[in-house]
Length: 502
Ligand SMILES: Cc1ncc(COP(=O)(O)O)c(C=O)c1O
Image 1 (cartoon, rainbow, N blue to C red):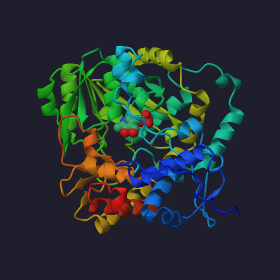
Image 2 (tube, rainbow, N blue to C red):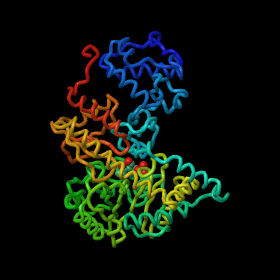
Image 3 (tube, protein in one colour):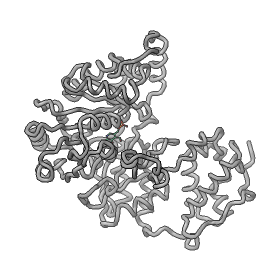
Image 4 (spheres, rainbow, N blue to C red):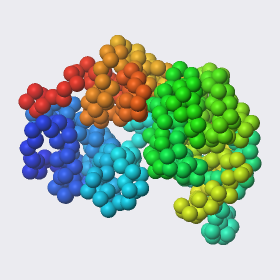
């Protein structure tokens, strides 16, 4: 067993004025790993030893280690201690900051005007080096994904796939997968359609991008939920459309306000089964009002059911698409939340009159989705494994939500009111003191918690301050660690301590 690397000889740079302690330590250790002062595979001292050596609190050292671990620089802790990862994460990936900074004026200097407004202010989600972190909200429980089963199905599909599946694919997507999707959305969401109306996309995001580019002209007005999904907002901006932020209340998008703000909007983008990010289910009355408006104005409704399968209580709600008699609704779904993110397969259910245009546009983007991945997914669905997995996850997510609610009750009472989610993978927690959600989020993030502030998702309509907390992808142990840490964060001042105060 290797002796623990001494950190004595690492020529660690002194902390800069105003720098947070844990971040300073994390940056210094990361630099030492990347330039070889700390060797891959070497053992690192315990957090206690390091804290003593540098006169730091153990919490500071642990926060730095947690960040390094989450980025893949430190391997999992074993009985023998922690080790520098061997091999290190790919260097270009490893250099990706947790959240990449928005494009700077220099980096956009060579872009066209369209390029500039398409990219300005966009924050990329970092590639995952660790899973299940509290309170990450955009990944399902990948730790529980049946990897062996998926590999067996994949092996079988790859062994049996005809040579033709290595040739050019269908721009709309692999036909057996489109058939399986048509059957699934018909049974699960009442979406009556056939395979010829389905286009397989690279997740819901590509679906939104294609829809907005094909159906909107520059300056067309579009109703968006406020707060709402930034990915949709970015895609609208890229299409040159004008987003009209519409308030959301306990029944979902406020159709009366929307009609007053922009009566002839060309399109409405909504998440009715699980409003992003608050989790409201759109009421039946609002669904009818929205459909009536669209039929009257000849407008489109984009129904984004990105995680509709995860409903834990209340009666099932009919999809807008199943209630639509005017052919106004375009239905978007994705397998990234139901199976795993990197699969990057989603779909759109289209009215027949626009199918050819979508096939043409898809072929301009990237010709077609990868055939063999689609064949594996089709087999996974047809063999019944998909349905089984979703039912199992529904049960587990519901349990994880209860764990979060109980922990919140025990450790955060009086500070946060965590709303038990009736659907989806995240929930909202209202800040009882009325303190800024951004300030709390910033402080929590500096301790390694992946929280989002509700105000990060609002455009013009203010809400009381709230935190967006993912629970589905987090193990109960991680939820416990996260809640305890959050309780500490919320009971400390929002001012980050300087070194001399520690
Ligand atoms: C509301 C909503 N729509 C669409 C997406 C995009 O999903 P995908 O990963 O399939 O592109 C997300 C992802 O978080 C989402 O939250």
